[in-house]
Image (cartoon, rainbow, N blue to C red; front, top):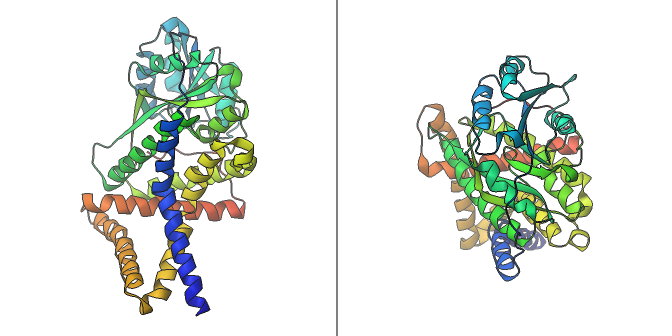
Amino acid sequence: MILRLAAEVIFWLSVAALFYTYAGYPLLLALVSSLRPQKVRRGEFTPTVSVIITAYNEERDLAAKLENTLALDYPRELLETIVASDCSTDRTDEIVREFAGRGVRLHRQSERLGKTAAQNAAVELARGEIILFSDATSLYQPNAVRAMMPSFVDSSVGCVAGRLEYVDGSDSDVGRGARSYWSYETFLKRHESRVGSLIGASGCLYAVRRSAYVPLYHEACSDFIIATKMVEQSLRAVYEPNAVCTEQTNRQSDKELKMRVRIIAQTFTDLWRHRAMLNPLHSGFYGVQLLSHKVMRYLVPFFLMGLFVASAVLAPGSLVYRLAFAAQAAGYACPALAWALDRVGIRSRLLAFPQYFMLTNLASLIACYQFLRGERYARWEPIR
């Protein structure tokens, strides 16, 4: 009797947690952003901008990225480009030097300390009023920089994040799943920005006031924690959907899993270091955003396991719980089938989303384990 009661409590608490994470929080955001939106004062603004591209062994994509940056629709005399090479061992540095005559500057780290350390060093060299961070694998639409600047007229804005669009010419299952997932994330970004501040940016396209940039510890997930660093200074990180960049998705599930594990493990470190910001009494609604968008999302694997075990315990005595258990079993069979089909070269649009859902939650589970073991990430390897 006690076991059954405990199982029922776990079952319904897990259901409630999952509902809130994926539906309740987006509904709360939509409601709050409609009732009390915090608008951004925009105006004409053309400051000096330093584009910082961090790179480690990016010889495949770097030349195209630099051509794309130099072709941006922004006054050339107001735009500088710095490539921060984290001790690259391929032709990355050589490619940058080939662009030196066109104003591209190379900063090579004396020691390989990771992406965030390279960004910190490049910011020290930058001359722009606005620092724009980018990746070697992302390509900007011509107006991307110009579209971000008007929001900086608002003195409460410390960071402006652009819109990332994933592309996948091969139409892979992983790519389809990533695009679906990112559409959901984009919805959250729009409303979080209207509520007050984003909780993170897309690492390939975000700009920060030089005066508000704070050097970050090396293992930081810089594009996530930058928003918290703004809020700590009573500033906002806002979303600009008209500033668009594109990036190729991963096409292989193992590479996507590796990338997700690294990002989530870094985010766990960031959340722990800034755990005071998780308290709404300290940080207001921003604390609710962090708890809902990040902490609850990364706890989903535990909610799913609780739900599955509780369903198994309760199934013998109830048709409702038997159906719930069967539905979960079928749901877990879908990504397993997708992976099996993928190995023999068969793709299924129907199975792409459950496969990616399982991949992201497996990444959360692995990252949690690594974080609790004390493993930390600072260095990174090109995956795409």
